[in-house]
Length: 211
Image 1 (tube, rainbow, N blue to C red):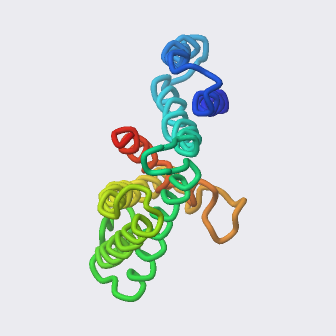
Image 2: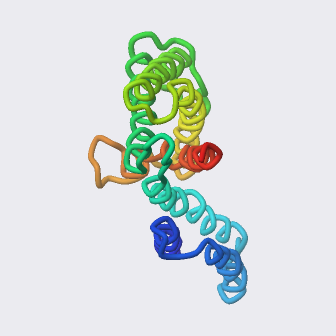
């Protein structure tokens, strides 16, 4: 189901499918409820919630990467590839510089109950550095104005921080340290994309507002 959701969004993003077919997701999601009647379970709605969460948290955001990559703004000569690159630069620079500032100056915990290592100093330092990078990106690429990129970066950075915290909460609830072991030292694939998959819906929405 998740693979199908990703595929359909990708086909829509590449103009192989009309937007009206995306509404087909609604009845398909409700088929989960019917299927739960035929499976013996002590917690049917908890199982339903986990299945729907997988679609909402993983398949749809990854599908939206296709949407960004295929967007274009003729007025600013913006290509989808550059918009997607800019998004990942913002997300990953925020994460990288937050870590560097946190290691160097971190004293006050940001959300100790969920992630005891993250600090206010790291988050603020990473955010300010990323805003400077976003301004420079706008200045040198002429895709939107520098101030528009700063505004986009503010939303992406804030949602990326929450995405990181939500991933930490998810792992803590499952009593695991990493989301997988396919990437030694990186915590798993989902750990590498936790901030991005939470931020991309906001980013797509803002890009559509600017189109």
